[in-house]
Length: 234
Image (cartoon, rainbow, N blue to C red; front, side, top):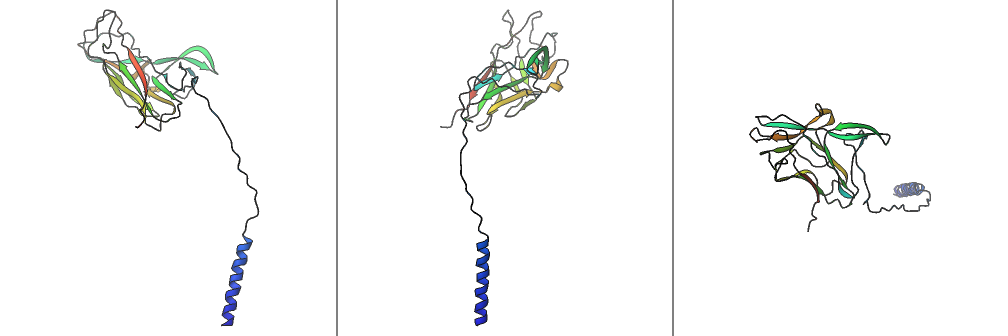
């Protein structure tokens, strides 16, 4: 029995001894801080080239929560058709820049719209597009009946879907759910590589064959872009 007790005491001593040798060396630790402060972004004019080339001058306006860019749609001069026809829009056109300097040349691109949100709230927003109730009219107040504006093949870093816009209607062109859409958000309809003879086949104006178009005159519609913040939950 004495031998057994001695063995247990020796084993205990070995275990305790090994624990003592694993105690780490003394270390001096001190925690400091880093700080940074930001003012309001009212004068911010950041935009981004959706093609990633960064060689175009995108006109914009300053602000922390604004439509950074929205396109016009020009459909050019066309022959009157007796059939329902879809007319593609002229490609969007921008001044070319190289090393930050205007070259005097222009570059054609697929149409895009861009929202700048630097509020820091992450509350979300909606960019909508509306057409005037009269649709496309000329200087004689003559309306083209039954017109539809189609925005197809959207590519976006937030939410966007193909839409059809009728006179007097408003549709969502791009939106961001709460927690998304901060910084710069873009929707591009089609791609620059898909342009055909200077036209964007993803932006179409559909006109019925029986719309009674008057020749030798220009028709114009008012298209209104609206950026609205998503209401906060009560």
